[in-house]
Image: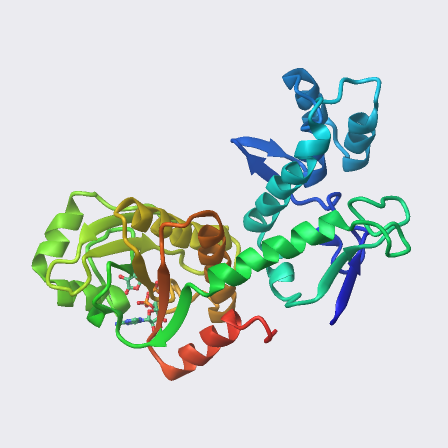
Length: 317
Ligand code: APR
């Protein structure tokens, strides 16, 4: 069994260190690193928590949190593992770089390797508890179980008998070419009339309609970004188009939802880059929400089917 040892943020797999500069948001509060959040949760006093939040470096945040002149919450020993789990699941599902690196560690044993810590790390001699490594592997298992809900198929999305299909729409929501054109043609004129009431939709957002003449019960119209060489925050907008579609699917209680490869046609988004964002957005959502049972990625060509299937296979880089 392969072993991956990590510690310094500058080394390979350094993103797994709590000191890595990957911000997280928990209960609408932003933290510069998972270390900041972890150290702040040692205190029940919101003023002390806020003091940690405002500290610049994770090292200084750790020093502040370890200062026993300050009142440690009495139940810290009982809650610290779950505090760390909360921090790390946020870090993995809110930072695509961390998600992707953890995704490709496959079944390797993850070890925080340092003599400085025998609880969260291995104590340098391998006899430590390595609790941070254990939590990372727990969260990787959540990725694996979410992946079992994702299928990649070849076909025409307009033919699917499914709770909801997602349309790669444009901001007007009045139809167009590609999958948008196919969906509007198959759904019928009423769809266009219904969508007109939305008076458009911003890039990265999504709106829902019924399926009309389609076999699908609902259509979720997601507006992906046009590719401008990555200069207009396209990655984030594509992520939001997928994530907002999952939120809407959950709101209409769809149990099974199908996506096309949004923005990879007329909008010219680089295919493999788009698929990595699609995988991150869909799998992260499924890791945190249990209401959707199945997500189908519908590829319109054999070539697309091969490329998307490869991306969802943890053994392929
Ligand atoms: N079923 C599944 N996938 C399809 C179908 C279909 N019937 N038709 C096309 N596709 C695939 C394309 O092969 C591509 O991989 O959908 C993906 C998205 O391509 P587009 O439909 O061109 O959508 P996008 O790149 O997001 O551009 C959206 O194009 O059609 C117009 O009105 C639309 O302005 C909007 C823009």
